[in-house]
Every structure is written in structure tokens, then in C-alpha cells.
Length: 387
Image (cartoon, rainbow, N blue to C red):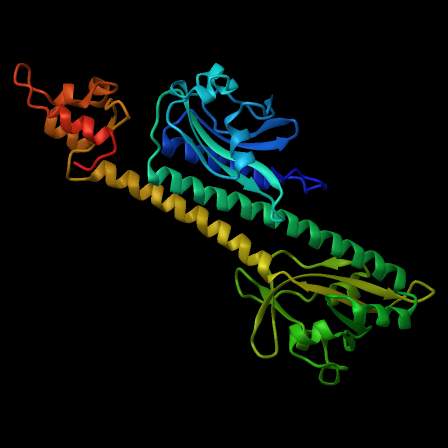
């Protein structure tokens, strides 16, 4: 197991809410009482996120020694773990989860983008379960989503540190123009300097690459002509922050989801800050605009949103298929006991869900004294065979 050796970013409230929705969806689809995201805090495993439900014995912030836990095995091996019934396996007889009645388990390891272990994502049940390929595939998809969130958190923190550092350096160097230009040429973000009329007096190499304008072409042009920005959502023109700085004399940052349109029509998602340049009498003499390309981070965010929309669509589609099918459909558990039936089942066989829920499907459909139900086929099906 790879142990964390450095400080990792805090998990944001937005990410926590997204993960909570994720484990709730997993628990519903897999029909288990417990779906969890566990976090390693040596020598403990902590419940970071727990699916919401009265039957779930785990609560967020619960901690337990890793020794003997299902999750410990997942972290040590770096592989998935699928246990249909721990009561039938002497290797798990001392597992603390058994005290809570959790005898079946499926879990996957979670990692930070640098390969350090974060924890696990898992589902548990109080009865023997042979989790289907669809469920394990869904868990793999959620693992990818959680790890993508972790990658974004690290990148956002890195960007925040860079921007904070740039802002502090810019403030310190505003009164020393020559030193400022030397520094701005060497940094990794785009920089544009304007005079009091908003005309460009300086542009560094990164800004040239992003805008498509060389300094000789951009010099003395209005900044709006070179630095064209629109809303990523609406495509409408966004007010240039340089104008706001010149009007109000304060530092201005761009709104989220702003697109820079380069001279050749290329688009970049950017984050920026514009600050006033002041002379020794504190009078505004121009502006400095610092901006960075955050297109990759923007695309990550969009990918996460699209993934969530796709999952919601599939859930609604499956639910509609079940309810509106022209065939009678019954959903059963591993013991062949009825969990749910659709309207066509009620119309065809005359039973309501309240009458048959929890009953063996063969018992429900068998005619008294005739034994028409093929129980051997049922046993073969529950053993994982195609019938």
C-alpha cells in the first residue's frame, strides 16, 4: 500500500455533494443497504461518504482499525475484492464488518493522480450476493469519476497557488516597470499591459501564443481588439476587465467559464486577473492583465457533468422500460424472492406487488397441485447459467 506523504487538497463541498449523490445511486441500483467511499487515515479507515438509508449501519466520520477489514485487502493488493458470503470463508471470520451483519462485499481502490492511495469505493449487503457484471462495471465507472474529481482538486489547488503568487508578485513590482517587464516575460501565464487609454504597451510570449497577436502587431491597439472574450455558455461578449480596472481602480477577476477567441478563431477557456498600475502618487497609469489557459480543467468539468447526465438518462430509461414493457417483468433477489413487478405482470397474473413482494416467484406462479414451475431451471439461473 502506498501511504500519503504530503498534504493533499481538501475535498470541496461541491465534490462531497456529488459523491453523496453517487453512492445513493449505487445503493439504489445495486439494491444494497450500504454504498461507501472510504478514506485512508492510517492506522484507520474512515467513512467519508455513506449512502443514505435507515438500513445502512455506517455513518460519515466513522473510523475503524484497518486490520481485518475488507477495505484493507483492497488497498494492500490494489485490486478489486468480490466476496459473495464471508461466512463461508474462514479468512474473513474476524472481519469487523461481520459484526454489523455485512457478509457480502465488492470494493475497488481509489487513488490520487500521483498514485498515492486515497481509499476505496465499495458496496456491502447483509445477505449473500453474487454481484452482476453490470453492477461491477458501474462501480468501475464511478471509480473513474471519483478519481477524476481528485485530479481536478489537485489541479485547481495548483492553479490557485500560481494565481495567488502571480498576484502578489504583480503588486510588489507595479512601481518598478523595468523589473516588472523582465519578470512577466519569464512567467508561464499570458500578460498584457495597457496604458491609461486601454491601448496595449506590452505583451509577453504566452499572450502572443494564446491571442495569436505578436507584440509588433498589437502595440497601441485597443485591448478589446486583441483580447476578445465571450461567455462560454452563451457566446455573448463579456466586458473586458481592463475597462473595469480603468474605471474603478481596483483589481478585477474574470467570471467563470470565459472563452478567449484568438486571432485565427481558436478558442481557449481562461482565468484571469486585471490590476491597476499606479505611480508614486498612487495615480492609475495603466493596467496589467494576467491570464492562464484552463481549457483542460474546463473540459474535465464538462466531462463530469456529461457523465452524470448520461447516468440519469440510463436510470430513467431502465425505469421506464420496466414500468411500460408489454411483457410481464418481475425483479427477484438471489433467493428468487420477488422485489418488484411491473403493471403488465399485475394484469397478466392478477397479483399486486403488496401480495407477492418477498415471496418465491415459483411459488407465486405455480398452480396448486400441478407443480408447473420448473424449479430446476430457476436453480440453474440463480447459479449464473443461461436458461
